[in-house]
Length: 491
Image 1 (spheres, one colour):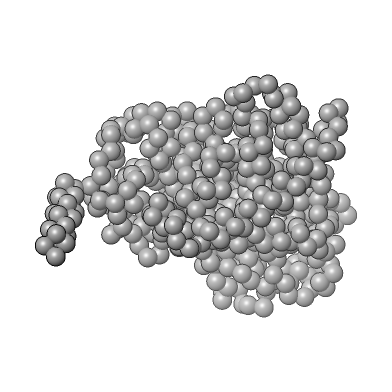
Image 2 (cartoon, one colour):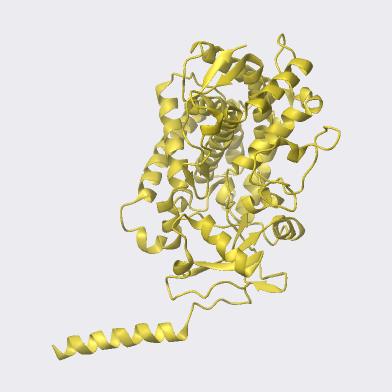
């Protein structure tokens, strides 16, 4: 009995000593921030509405560069256009490391083109950019693929004859098919059960990754990983996609013609064969599978979610949709398909698409970075491997660059003569060395899909515009728009 009391007193004394000693120590001189508790970090400063709300409140007190302890680990936050650009562009190499997202780390494990670091990342990114360019990135071939997919969508929408529908999976189908044509060398039918199952896995996973429970997991993953939770469902979903990818890779391997590579997988398999004698090569099966998962997931979910937000905004602001219709009629008419060359003649439509991207604010916290070496930034010393969050929403809603940042207004991107206006705070794909790999494809998709749909259809809602709620279903790593019903009425 006495031993138990002594043990309890010893443990209590140890805990009190930790509290007296204060917060976790970090090398260097990190930016200011609220004082953390041992192990718990800045839990007391966390808002029940999620990490982003918490960061907003802390920024108001500590300025545009501040430190938050997510559990025991310090993370430096970059707030506003200037701070983000100074880091990711002016000191691009130093800030080019990739941080982690705790709920997907067990799946990606620092492999693949998105979450890799060092030489692995550089080799995979060089290869991916060159291969995607060869397969049509920025060339007419990718334009033709998007145009053909857009016409398939038009045919599908006509079948509904103006009936109400939820556009989620149709928008996923068209964006997934573009990346599938590049990566797997094929497109899928909109009724293909396996294809729809994969899209459902992506949709569920993106929602779960963005959920409040995933944000809590970010703080205490080392403890919570031993318990049931969203992290296990995400891993299960993505493993199902990985299984599909693995089968596809084996089919490619069995039918590979070295003289005529068909797609990204063939190009990678040929590179693997070329480097098979190199013990240190990064071109191996694990990097292939996880790179394909990264491209497939990101290439599907980001563009489709932007389109979903875009058409919800057209329902909310019908006068904007009407002006887009007018510009389409003037520039393209109804007898030919929209083309990328039309963009320069359609400043209002381009401004609307920019504003949809800005307002939808798809990855508000940004994908985490880390510094690749001890880095001096604004008078602070960030030790090597310190994680950094470039808070993209703080640029996309920067009042110094956007007159009414919380209002949907295409005029944000139009000059006094009605021309398209460049804006340094418009960074939906991030900036610097880690800028989104598929930015070019995504921009082409958004223009061609958006204009083709509005060339052929007017949109209508069962809800009055003033009653349409734009509040996202989830807002964490990603922002998930509310579900809604829409009518596509043939023009």
